[in-house]
Image (tube, rainbow, N blue to C red; front, side):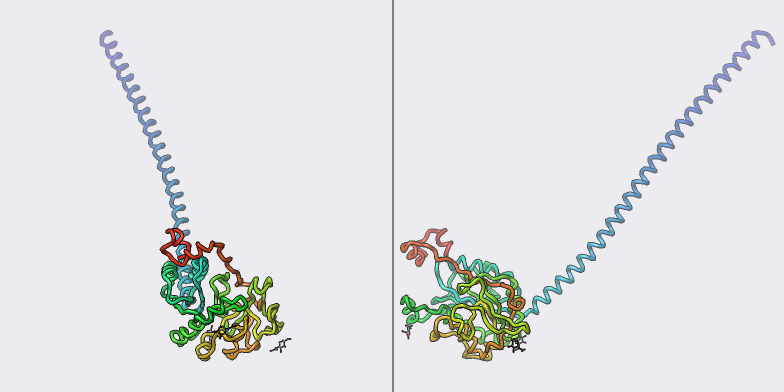
Length: 349
Ligand SMILES: *[C@@H]1O[C@H](CO)[C@@H](O)[C@H](O)[C@H]1NC(C)=O
Ligand SMILES: *[C@@H]1O[C@H](CO)[C@@H](O)[C@H](O)[C@H]1NC(C)=O
Ligand SMILES: *[C@@H]1O[C@H](CO)[C@@H](O)[C@H](O)[C@H]1NC(C)=O
């Protein structure tokens, strides 16, 4: 081999080696690059897996919470229908309200109606001292959604009784004719009602919801204290430790057979149906309406069932609405709606 050839050969070999080294190096770089890529992908996938696992745990927790909520709702629904069922089976309360037209009447009846509209199984008997039922009360019952659970009656107090009402020495017993009309209405329309209690609730008293639970509990005649009445903080039956009523705290005419307020008692509907002549009267001394009525139901003091935690709780107050201080002219205008402005009419009619 000539030198020149040998040199060429060596140069070629050298070139091959260099190319191989370069190729090998390149391959190595490629491999480490793809290895790094793979590792990054694995890391990313692992992060994703962790995330998904966390999400899964979260969803499982949520599912558990939802299941608990469902269970809760099911119990609530069951309780609700039970409560509805219980409410439907409550004894009926017949709430009798005699009422008379006066500037404060709409305000008083709105307040009372908004109390009564919340009471289950209550039937409101409104009896106006008027020739006919007023639009004002009809609209009120409509607004309260109580047209189906009320009776709206009207009966005038006889003229001769009105006449001695103007005599300053004569106090006209209020609501005699109207309460009697309510009793007659009950005998005619609700005689077959099996469980019901009748209560006389004036339009200006204040009633606690708990009173209605007490009214429903009576067997024949229930009694309870009345707040701020008869010049006292409370007028209450006195209850002996054996649970019988042995007296009354009344200061005004304590000699009455039943020295209690109209708001202090409720009677079983069946007593009213059985005693067809029982009622109120113009012919009894002032303050004797309650005694007259209870006696006409053939009840005596021994029959009184003390309610409201043995007469230790007050659920009704004999509040009174202050008479509006109106001028003679304004008072006259209240009698004729045509003379009233729109808001004036809305205030009272
Ligand atoms: C009220 O008027 C009626 C009818 O005129 C009469 O019978 C009654 O005795 C009068 N009462 C009083 C207390 O004046
Ligand atoms: C009223 O009397 C009847 C029996 O006449 C009774 O079934 C009922 O429980 C009593 N009480 C009420 C609130 O109806
Ligand atoms: C209850 O107690 C009163 C007063 O102590 C008593 O007069 C009455 O006879 C008692 N009634 C009963 C049913 O025990």
